[in-house]
Length: 258
Length: 332
Image 1 (cartoon, rainbow over the protein chains, first blue to last red):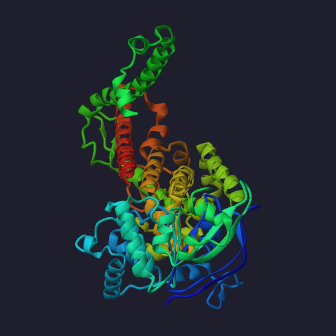
Image 2 (cartoon, rainbow over the protein chains, first blue to last red; image 1 turned 30 degrees about the vertical axis):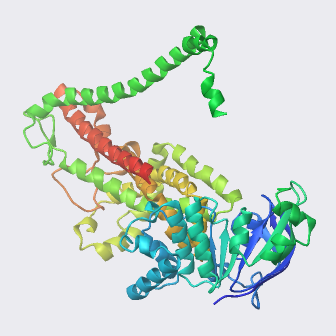
Image 3 (tube, rainbow over the protein chains, first blue to last red; image 1 turned 135 degrees about the vertical axis):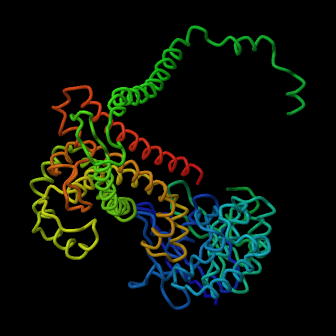
């Protein structure tokens, strides 16, 4: 189910402003890769180029290549809608559909794909909620609105919604930044369970989190306000946190900068 | 820090300035408060006075009414005793307004969705102004245009659209064929629909603009197309607002006078009644406007004012309903 992501020479723009410059990196399948770096270094922007969500902002565009196994996401004729059905995303703030029930939230992606069979939907909803470690808490109130859940439960609901369509890759944009420590721990445990099946990339501001959940870490930085973000280095998380190759990385993770 | 703060209470010298305030600097506040409260009270007083006026002027005539005011179609307020009922007026008023709403709302929602979700900014802004401009066109212009330009095209006895509807749905009394040319409820409804389009569009557009970015991105990230995003995220969020907008549009349509007066042809007598939208008729407003020159005796005038009272109550109810939906929206 999981695919490798191979980025080469990628620039991302908002209008005339270059937010990310010349990023080349590889994300291994069935592993967790963390993107860390100071605010504004373009890590979220970069993440959003992996499912072509960057371009939904007016004026935003991308140049360069993002290969998903052997397909370039930015080739002519590639349908962004199809890309997003393959590369799932979880956002910073939990964003369940407010007018939908828990069940309908999880089933939303399948219904968009035209699945109407009640039995199939039931199975997928149960399986996805179990994968998101939420089944036990909500199985007796699937008809309740998704917005009735706590923040941490809502975020796991969003993860269930994302995995329900069996994506190849799961992008997580600071998924715990709006959550309390207990909910954060639940999500981190979940990420460990999910990495057997999916390629996971997580953007985080929390370096302990990156150290706890990721196999590999990429460090980004900016030279200053108005300058584009750049990749400094990417490597095994244990290596990065104990013996970073670059001085900038060491300064950042030891708290001397950023 | 905490212990230091508790051990040193605020010095007594500092407290009086907090209590006394700036005695001289508050006259502005007082004037402001009187003005705002006065304006608020004025609104209530105006509504109550209007209602009271309608009741006061109509009750004597209503007491003399020889027929049932609600269920009768007779309109002979000058007879002795007077006989007048609003059944036909109510039917024509509600029918033309509801038809107008049915035609206007889908178009308005479409325009609002286009302006907020599809159109590039450079196009959306001027188009939005244009829609607002439609609301500023005086209703007499719509009336003239409807009667003399649109009418022959869509509503005459041998006009295409009317013939098509009569042929397809004529077996339903609502759409049965009549000999009334142009001046029918169908044409009035179309013109009313155009007249309420701007307000329904403007409010729907505001609501659709408020759909949180996160909701839209949630749908997009699941691989929803533009239309699916609208269906999954935008429409459910905007539904209460669109209903509110429709109610306000309906309120306008119910009370619209001059355009309807120009367009609708009056049947020779109200006893001559037909359910068809291709029949003429009179609404509350057009009935009163058509006969404004005949308010000669209190008895006759009272009958027309009674009709106005019903219109007042109906629009009041529709607006109240809109309010209920607005307050519900606050809960979401």
